Image 1 (cartoon, rainbow, N blue to C red):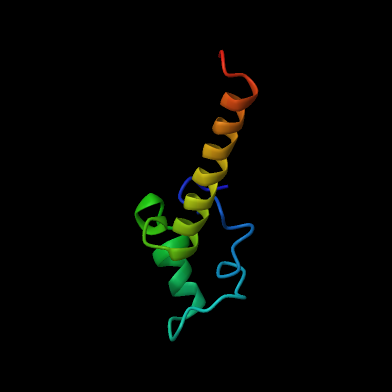
Image 2: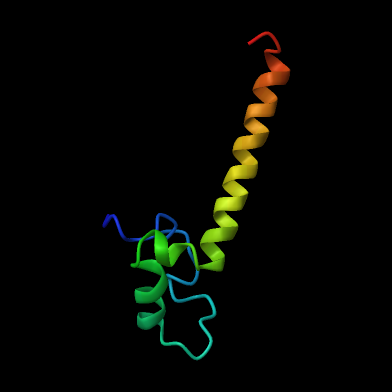
Length: 72
């Protein structure tokens, strides 16, 4: 996988052509967001939502570790 390709591309409906890109052709949308590296990903709503969800999951895992093992 290219280092500039979004890490969510395999599961992204927009990248797969199943999501909404408005009047923007899919190839252009992919070039602006999916293949642009962090600069493009940071402007993509799907990427931002996935990152937020991932952070929430990781935060929950850390809280559970603390509850399961309060002494460390």
